[in-house]
View 1 (tube, rainbow, N blue to C red):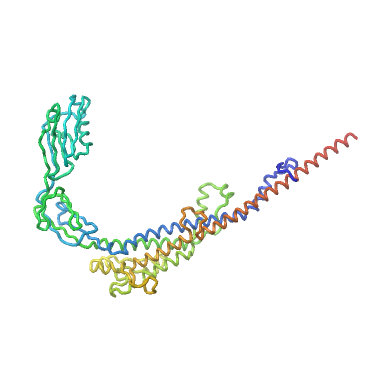
View 2: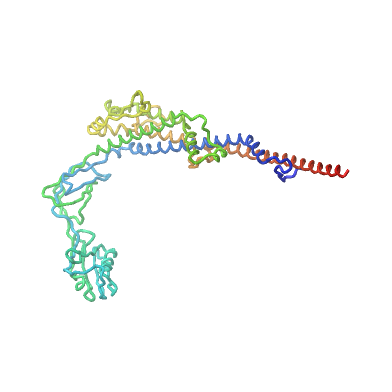
Length: 495
């Protein structure tokens, strides 16, 4: 049995470690090729994952365009935003409103008499007083010998009773004000121990001061409001000033919102076309395979990054999933929507057409071109017809061959994108780790490669051990021969 001790060329003078390392380079070549294949699959997964992110993004946009709620938003405009500003909620309905503002709602305000002090100075008096605010809330303000005017104001302001206390440095007086408005907003100072509120802060004690309500008339109906705002018919009115004349608020279909949604879809679609074209037409760089461990060790970080950029280029060249998916989406956009009026059953009817081939600009082929004026005119003329182009549903069974032709463009594209995303998921799985061996197609490939790599690594250990045993046996034999030669020389010398 050959010993496991490694002599390392002690007898022969040879660098056996280097020799074995060189021999193992040849043995390692199949393993390196498997590692490179695995790296390519991991990179391909990353590219698909990036593509799926873009597909999911445009799907989110098109999802909102499938439903009429996305086209029925209302917009409000005021004839005098300095008096009344209006915004709509999801329940707003079209209509016209006249608003007259006779009085704004105000908060309760208590103003003290003149007292010239420095807010940071100590008060040098001990006592307390109570501040009552709206809704019966109150706080006891404790004043000690170490209290400053500032610290007393902070007690009131942090009490949560809906009252703020401040010092008017211009007119030299303390002021108390409610944070709410209307006749339910009240301030009262009581229990003035040691005459602090009245004597030190110069505030009026035991007198309740209230805010006032707004007085507004909507469509001729007068009402009082505790706030300078109200909501009516899904419209929020923000009262800002008193009006000498009636202000008109007009609520109507938000056609700008409809047009902007469609424009956003066109932009996102064109970006998707750009991305797919780039990934599927970039030709792989010849001679740039993934680096082996040995090659990496011989390179700088910058060199590695430059090399890998070249090696990753063209991984999805002529990829069938992407090219066929884009082709299906394009076909869905080209086909008319059956069951709609002839003047509003194609995208071209609202100013959206496909770009033709232009010399020197091959990347523009297949993109959408938008005539914004035609779109705006269509939306203004018949917003419901534009909406139906994208939202129309079919009563047919989804498996019926004519089902898709009767559905709007948003539903078609949403389905196409879903199919595309699911195909990619089936190919790469849902993992975020590029080299995970899962049940996806690429995951199974990685699993098979891992198994083959494990077999090769075990084989390489066996081969390396065999080389060391062979060289160790050689060194042992040479050592024995050298010893015998020395003995013979000694014997001959004695003779």
